[in-house]
Image (cartoon, rainbow, N blue to C red; front, side, top):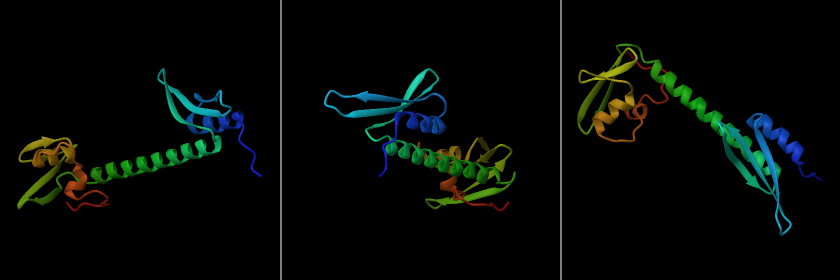
Length: 149
């Protein structure tokens, strides 16, 4: 039978997951149940990351959250590499509402209609007027490994 995790074991695992400022706080309620709070101090603030009555489940959720965050970071790094892989002088073309839009890679940014932009998102905003838009996806370069010059 699985023995319940002790507070000390949970604290050791929380610190391996979250760093040396992690805490596992035990709260005993008047009605007899015990609750736990897993938190971490960062920049003078305390972030409560999990709370509940089962330490094993709480730490399993934190491990899963950390893995999802790593995967998200990997997708972000890949997306940045995709845009950085566009050679200087390369053009990206998109037809939208019957109009063809051509953007040229120029140095650290892009140009469209003779104006410089810092990102494809800035160009897509200027074209569509949308406040929330993903320029890489809108121009169709998201996930591509190469863009032809």
